[in-house]
Length: 265
Length: 327
Image 1 (cartoon, chains in turn brown, cyan):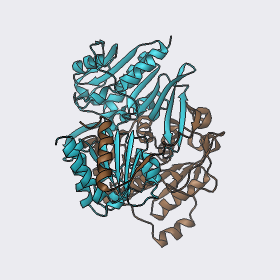
Image 2 (cartoon, rainbow over the protein chains, first blue to last red):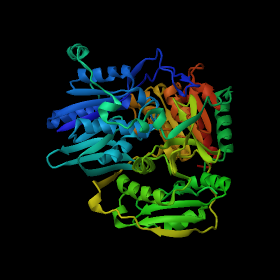
Image 3 (cartoon, chains in turn yellow, red):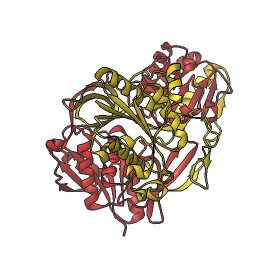
Image 4 (cartoon, rainbow over the protein chains, first blue to last red):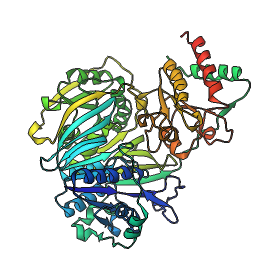
């Protein structure tokens, strides 16, 4: 079985984010970066799938050179092959362009049965790249996956559970498929020292737009169909009121105030 | 004249809630701004009733695609139908709710049409003859407005409750039946079973959320919050710290790695208010914060702050609400 996993490097969720407002882009200088937390679940699911069914894992990422770190971490966790899609032309890509580049990488890997990705990134937060990737590749689209029940590469079939509004939906789909996973699907493992040491010496192949056969008119700032017209800092919420007094009095006041909102039926 | 404004009507096997029609409110404003028509579109096995109901919420025309193949919700099937309709009619903008189902359809339809979309939109306004779509970025610390110049139509998923519900009236819509060739043979997915959640948390639709964090100290605290939530007809939320401590399942998590919510009342108990949590709830209409630490950042976001132990305050609130609401 051939398994692909898409990994994104994001600013540490604890980091203070700064926008370069004139450039309309994130200023990444001196910012701590991590693997997108949702992608860690995708990577773990790829590792579990490999262990259960045998196969090989290819991890791909799109981003600046620094994004090598997330792939090195994947190598330390015994992923078989990695590739970083990196090209100046990719900078400023919107979700569709990102999905297009990743789809080109999956095609270049070739004969992939299942692609795992996280349900969204913690920086862009769009949560649509998985679905777009499936649509571009013509693979089955399985989003919000909370459990993979079985993967049958020979029979070209996968059965998953999806956490949707109001419950769990069990879906059977043809392979190849793009599976985007939610938090809690598994418990991501940490690399061991030996893995880290081994990975630190490994070469991270880089794929440019040319290597991927990507039409540069369709990616990056030039190709992005969504154009950022304004970045603003939303007004802070008005200073609230601290209720003071005895508990009895506070409870009386707050319940009155909430009832006055006419929301409680 | 600008093209029409389209709103996708979401349902599960024909079942809707009034919330399914919420985007017809902002849709109407945009259509009036453009001097064009507000249209709804609906896909399903049988959608006559839904199409009619959309008329009562202000749609003047409803495009309906029906077929057995649409009996179960399948993102790929619905997206194929949606993409075909959008390509044929090229409305100015198509709005979907930013729910699991709405996002599945919108994202795949946009990709099939070959362009991007704006997700989890919280602001929509006409600017220079196009709709400017605004979304929160980086935990709500920034708002980013985009226009999708190359897309016809523009597509946006819209955060539930970001806009006011439209009034239900006596209006009726012209229903236009459309046939789209999607057959089971073209589809790669099949719904085997639906397991209804026993707890059935629908945080995104709840008007009132009572949420707990690390400060609850243990899973017992959530029993108290649930009592308050039940009394108010609300849902129970949680911070990541509470979920990671396994006091409550992940489906309750609000924040950057959980759900984004915008209830009318959000009561945060024992939640310090880390930016990751604020990202998921700071646009709530009224925020009540209860925390022992007077310096907790949650108080900066709160409409009403109470410095104290939730174990003292929540039971008192329950007592007062019971008396005042005659429950």
